[in-house]
Amino acid sequence: MLRRHGPASVMWRRRAAMALGAITIGLAALLFARLADSASTVFTATVHAIWWLPLIATPLAFVAIAWMTRRFAPEAAGSGIPQVIASVHQPKAALRKLISPKIAAIKGAFTLLALLCGASVGREGPTVQISAAILGWYTRLFRAPIRASMIIAGGAAGVAAAFNTPLAGVTFAIEELADAYEQRVALLVMTTILLAGIVSLGFAGDYVYFGAVGEHMSVGSVIRVAPVAGVLGGLSGGLFARAMLNIGPARDRWVPWFKGRPIVWAFLCGVVVALLGVVTGLTWGTGYSAAHAIIDGTNAPYWFGPAKFTATLATASSGLPGGIFAPSLATGAGLGALLRPLFPDDPGGAVVLLGMVAYFTGVVRAPLTAVIIIVEATASRGLIMPLFLSALIAHSVSTLVCKERLYHGLAKPWRTALSGPTA
Image (cartoon, rainbow, N blue to C red):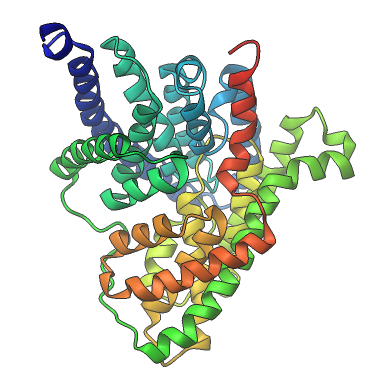
């Protein structure tokens, strides 16, 4: 009995690792969010003082970050969610490669550097990889057997802590991280999210990520707006996913000179981001401020959505560490701003949210997670049904544009790396 259920048993070592890991995830997510906001604030202040500086600094910073990533931590490139998806299939090998403490530290540092140079990245994807690494480290510290469920729980807690959306963490685990969602995984995920959420709430308070939206839509408005938002969001989001999955092979096929020159490609991507940012003044960083303003009723320029789409694609394809969650939500807000003049008699904030959820669903093809994130991040519980309708339509349309789900397609190289002879 003592061996199986005592304080030194495997069960209690696993529980201790989970509890301390969840508390650390909450603290780490909160600290990372504060540092990311500070980095964006510093860059914005710099641009206001010297408007032309990003034309020089941003491309050079893209080159430096891309080179350092490839040189010191190739596993830290990109969003971080594909690495966690791959880790679920090979948890023991992943602890040494994809979700090690070294990779987590470099991931966080390089993402902050990307925000300091104006790259269109988010902190949510990196938070997922960092959180999975934290729980994996505690598992090794307590000499508890590493299981896929621990990695799933860590990644889900990262999403929940990043957005202050606990239900979205659970749905994210269901739709993206876990192929087979068992009851044991569900309990572990919910417990980890609970502990991480308590820590986050204790320090940051009960906040709504994008501000509360109390609008409602009539049945007639839903029938008019949701299908249009779903089709346009599915088309544009599916196009982004398809471009992300195919831009590398297409580049090497049509311009073979770029093959083997990733640093040059990163420089060109930096030039695109810098030019868009200087000309528009709105496409820098996560896009959180712009999205928040659009939801509140500010009239955004018609070109904001396409410009943010392009800046995010250029940043993501450059190889820099950084997520696409927040930039995708900002692009979706731009799509909603385009829809608002088409439906002037309908609630403006609700129309924007339908555009956001449709585009985000089109990109990641996780409608349940998209709806729950929007609902929890805007306190818009009265719009659940319209959001679901728009998300389901967007999911169907996106499937026609891009057959493969974005994160799972991006996870394939990492799964291959873990299964190789060096794993």
